Amino acid sequence: MGPRALRRTLSLMVVPVLVAALLLIAPHPASAASGGRIGGGSFRSAPSMPRSYGGGSSRGSYGGGYGGGGYYGGGGGYRGGGMGFPFIVPIFGFGGGGLFGFLILMAIVGMLINAVRGAGSGPRLPDDDGGYGAISADGPVSIAQIQLGMLATARDVQEDLRRMAGSADTSNSAGLQQVLQETTLALLRHPDLWVYANSEVGQVPFASAESTFNRLSMQERSKLQRELTANVSGRRYSEPSTVAAGSSSGASDYIAVTLIVASRRGLPLKGSSTAEALRDSLQQLGALGSDDLLALEVIWQPEGVGEVLSSEELITAYPDLQHL
Image (cartoon, rainbow, N blue to C red; front, side, top):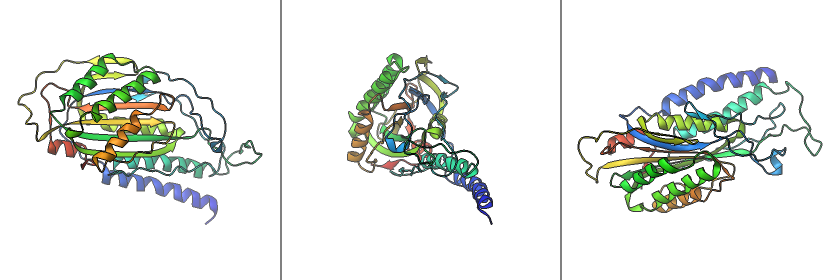
């Protein structure tokens, strides 16, 4: 079998493997509660990068560009053909690696398939040193996700998130950085109410970062019955809710908060296997500068007055959560 036939065979084998893996790890749908959402960002401008990743794309500004549940933006592509682009090894795995890990891996495999199919199919551009390695036009993007299950008595957290949704400026990077900082602070102020957590982080090529981030966002948003409160890329929405029947027992009912962050630089999170590790991971995210923040999603449920999640509903909707 020649090299061309081998490359074609390998690329065809990847698709059924990915589909089978997705069917095995995709969480089962759970009964959903209402929720809220704050976010924004843009992948339109290429990140600045170290010399080892090639050409000098300039760092641009954020553009609002939100619509239809995703973030607009073209994203950079890889120059040249061949297999010479930097392979980004996923570093997810702080307690699950379920659908998050799969989507990170799928983004990398997708880039590999494109590279295999395009090997030798076009001219290769010389780099600054006179060589002809296929250089990435943009550096890697780190995507982190932290999920936290807190006792339902953490009403202050919901109130803080609701307040931010009503007043935060999510149309620019500075406003998004403030939302990220305030959200992590709100969570850090209630360590006594932390019960379950999961933290994962991975790196993907810039060209596939936007689609990967959007898939993670849609996966988390699909867990909500409806979004009562939203503030995304400068657009606010608020829907009044009826008071849910019953009341929280405090000891067995929960609220869930999810943070998804895309960053130009690496995110050395320590995971969430212990309260100390989770605290450090939240502090790392909260300290991320606005110049490095590409996109942000803060999603919480429930949002309706009097609504709570039972322990069964929480674990079913967030199967990667680990008890602290």
